[in-house]
Length: 154
Image 1: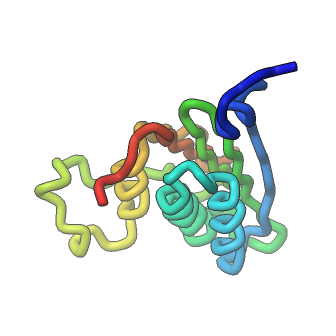
Image 2: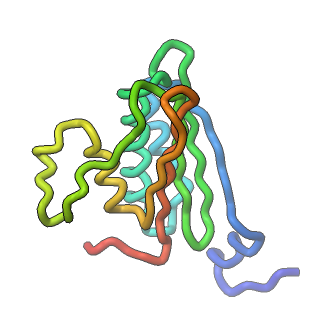
């Protein structure tokens, strides 16, 4: 029998926990994907960050990729351990997702960004790291890593 002193330690005693779910590639799935992710992050104090990250990533999918076409879909994967990996996979599209801007945060006026790259910029500021893989033909996978020990300044 495993003896641990807190529910958090008990739930992670067997190693990382992971979940995967697919969604129809439509705008009405954005709040559903957010609710799914936030429910998995309950008690981590990063629920809001995780919810905002998946909202931005999924909005990109349903606005800019083939996932939004009839029969389209996207996938969300969450792995929670010491760090948490939040991954969204789409069916590709015209362009590869890009983070903009490259300037330091203090020099960035989000109102000047328009729609292109703004969401990924926000995600990159919340996440410990952000990784973009894939191609327009086969699809993209965007992975944000959250440090569950770090807390946002309130």
